[in-house]
Length: 454
Image (cartoon, rainbow, N blue to C red):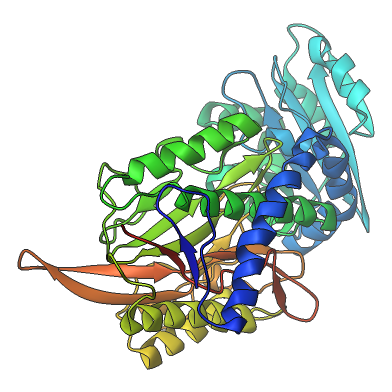
C-alpha cells in the first residue's frame, strides 16, 4: 500500500516486499512519467493526417458493413454538423456538402463548397475533388444533380436517432428531399450504423495518443491525492488542483467542465460536480477525471484513495476486501473482452462476480466506448444489470481497435442519520480490444492509495 503524508509530496513506506515493488511502480514510475508525459502535447497536431488515414483505411469497411453506397454530410457556419471535423467541414462558412462513395475496398470523396472556403479545402487535400458552386446557387440542387449522375442505391444522411449522426436540421432535410425528387429521396437512409462502424474503431496511432493521455490523467490524479490534508482539504480543492494541471498543459475537458473532475469522498453521487465536503478519516476518495488532447481524443480514468485514521498504518481489513473485490471486477471484465463477444456478455461476466463477492447491484453499465467523446459510439458494456435479454448497443460485438473505459464495481450500504445510502468502488480503467483479447492502455491501479491523518 502507498502512503502519503498529508499535504506533502512524500512517499512514506510500504507494508511488504511485494507491495514495496508494486508501490514503486505506482509512485516513482509516475513521477518519472510526469517529466515526459506532456511532451507529446508539444508536437504538431496529428489529426489532419490521421483523419485522412481513417477515411482511406476504415471508411470503406464501415460503408460495406452499413450497406450504403454514398454518405452525405452537410456543414455550415454557427450550427455545424457534429461530424464536421471528421469530413473536413469544420471551417465551413456558407453551406457545403461532403459526399463519400463506396468503391469496393476504397472510397472516393467530393466536397461541394462555396468559393470562399474552396481554396482552403483544396489546400488540406482531404478530398478527391473540390467543386465550387457560385454565389447564390443552391447547394441542394448541386447535391441532387450529383446524385442524378452517380445514381447511388442507398444514401446515408446524418438524420437519425444517434445524436452525433443527427446533424441535418429539419429544414435542411426538407430542402434536400425537395431537390432530390421522389425517386432519389426514397434512397435516403440514416447514417447511424455507418457512423458507429466507422468511429468505434481507432487506428494504432490514435490508440498510442490515447495511451499517453491516459498516463497523464492517472498521474495527475495521484499527484492530486498528495495535497490532501484530512479535516482541511475539500473535494473541490482536489478538483481545482486538477483544473490547474489542465490549464497549464493546455488540454480540454473530456466531458462537461462543471462535472470534470468529479471528486467524491462521500456517498454515491453519480455524474456530478465536486462539492465543498471536507475529506475526513475513513473516507474513500473517488476521482473520476478525463482530458481531451489535440481537441480530438479523450481519456476517462478513476483512481481511488482511502484516508487512514490518526495513528493507523494500514487500512482496515474490510476496506481492503472491498477494494480487492472491485479490482477483481475490473480484471473479470477485461478477461471477457474479446473480438466477437457482445458488450452485454462483458457486463454479465462482471455481474456474476459481483453477486459472488456480495456486492449490492449497481445501476451503471460496466463500461462504454471512449475516444472522440468520453462516451463514444460502439458496443455498450452494459445491459445485464437490467436482467433479461441483450438489447440495444449491448448486442453489438467487439472489434479489434475499439477502446473502452470500464469499471470494476463493488457496492455496499451504509446508514447516515438513520437514512440508508450507499458507496461504490468503481475501479475505472481504459482498454483496447486486440485480435486475441484486450489489454489495458496503461497499468491498472493495483493498490489502494492510503493517505495518513495527523
